[in-house]
Length: 421
Ligand code: ADP
Image 1 (cartoon, rainbow, N blue to C red):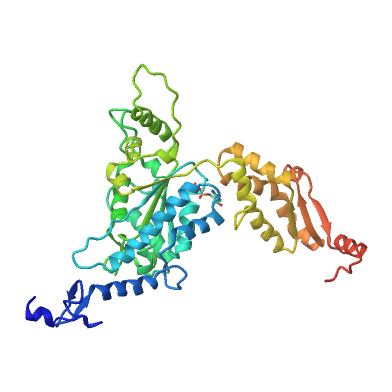
Image 2: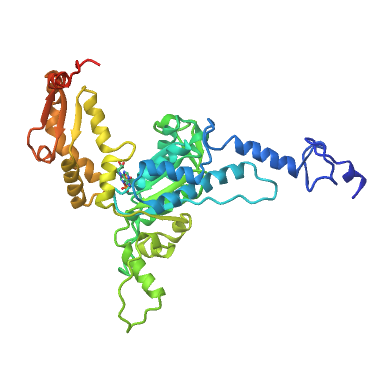
């Protein structure tokens, strides 16, 4: 060790070159040792962990999963994969903030979510954003034009995220964007036709750029662009993209591959393996019509499943903001209690299950059944109705059972109470 090296000291803890494992030099004879770097990292990290009031939090995957359980029914594997993906994503952002010289950045892992419509894909992404406390925007791949450039449509997606962050660019730059219906922009399958339809490719190309990380220039406050106007620059490198779609028919591609790789020859008669969306691999997505470059940027693949009747019932009753609780709140605003009987709940679940619209069907069936009652609700309120009981017959058009304020008072008096508490 030279004399000069012996004199070098950490400017924070004063450990010498010999006492520390590594000493990093700064300008004008300042140094920091590896231990102080680690300490600084811990301090920074502590400031960014869960529960802190800072702008975003690195989520603990288990706690995030528990939070998702309160809001999303079923999709257990998807919730776990999402929890880990989001945990890693925000750790990556913190890591890249405090990168040591010579260290490489950790690359971003965006998510591809596939599964039927109305089963909670968007909800999962939205709830994750809520938990981490970052802005969230939803876009639809079908509304993006085929320009193939980072054009207006892509800017619109970023503008939406900026709006969700009150035009705070820093906040927007670590938000989450859900892009729905990417499967509608798939090229037609490899084997379909020689003159194959390439219509979706331009959109996939345009998305590729923002998903990978680019700087998008948007007009301030989302107004129209005009020449000479100062633009807001948003870097998309730290935005987490969750790209979703129903991918109808991909199960056939997955099964075909799974059967092939199980070593099935031409002469063998074997039952088809129902591997489901969980077994989807990048190759299956490429066969389906996503371009390899896009698939490469979506390394986390999450499968979501159809909801059975038990799940639908839980969505009606058990989740934090269940449909029944929401309806009851709307009635309560008119000072009327809404009671929905078990047979009415079962009816809604059966009808929604039949419609195959996932949980979306629940809302439409319930809304249809409650339409007349909601139309008459102000009258019921003025007529001193206290409770409205809805059973299956009511949902099918019969009048509901009404309980008036005085009925309740009389009952209380019969029970020896005054009716005034
Ligand atoms: P997708 O994105 O899969 O088409 P969404 O997440 O938009 O479906 O679901 C539509 C609505 O249905 C949600 O806002 C939510 O109210 C309800 N929903 C769907 N799936 C679930 C689920 N698994 N758990 C709780 N609610 C759900």
